[in-house]
Image 1: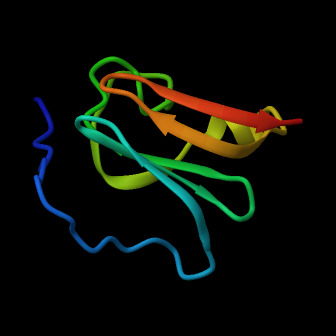
Image 2: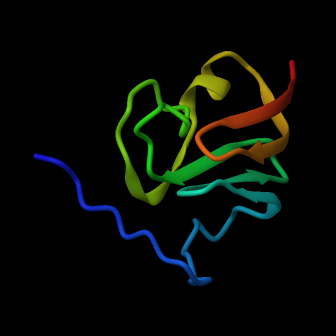
Length: 92
């Protein structure tokens, strides 16, 4: 079945693991991404076009770390979300 994703038109509190410090946030039309001070990227929201970066088109109400960056030894520095895209500046 299709997952229900709660798309809210107003700010909402979000729980991230306590040891994460957010350095940057960007919002697309239906998804959000954060870069942590440690260089990790977390995304959530509507993922129909793969804009969450998890290697599929699934959507998620909960922040998920983009494991591809970790596996490749890349550190996220900046993130910019477009309507159906996510752009990331990384360092090796």
